Every structure is written in C-alpha cells, then in structure tokens.
Image: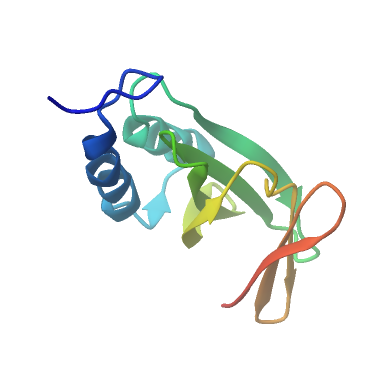
Length: 129
C-alpha cells in the first residue's frame, strides 16, 4: 500500500507529479497576458497554487510578467517570465526554483542579463538571455 502524505498524495507519486509539471510543454508566445495566465492555470495540479507574481516595467517600455505553478509538497515552483511588447507576450524564461523563502519579487534586464530578486533585493537567479 502506498504511503499517503499529509495532503493526501501518495509519496511514491510525488516524483511523477514533479516531472509532469516540470517537463510539460509550454508555448513560447501568447496573444495576451490573459492567455499566458490561462496556460499557467491549465498546468496547475488540482488543489495547489499558481498565479501571477507581478508585472515589472522595463526601461525599454516593455513589461516582464512573472507567473508560477506550485509543485506539490516539494517546496518548488515552476516559473514563467513573459515579455510583453504591444499585445504579444513572449516567454523569455521558464525555470524551477525552491520556493519557501525565495519568491521572485523583482525582475531586471540589463543588456543581455536577466536577474531575479526577492523582497529584500537579494539576487536569486541570473541568466544570460
């Protein structure tokens, strides 16, 4: 009999659920931020969290929007970062990060670098674009 977790998920299923969320194909362009948000919602595991982390204006006039999907019981989230220019949204980053204290609260692009910060201004992630 599988061991059941406190949240009624079988412990032996957690890796399968993580792999399904982490490796699910995700489109790279959307007609609007609403469409991006809907795609994130479809990826969510029933009973667990997902949503927007904020929209951050950039010096070039575009906006970066951050969305995330909780990976059940593993203190991880899959993040999606969209760049809005006009109405079209392009996903410029898609990654998994531990989540209990390291929530993305700011996104900054400097040349070809994208940097993610928490609420204290601590750098969480840096990526070459």
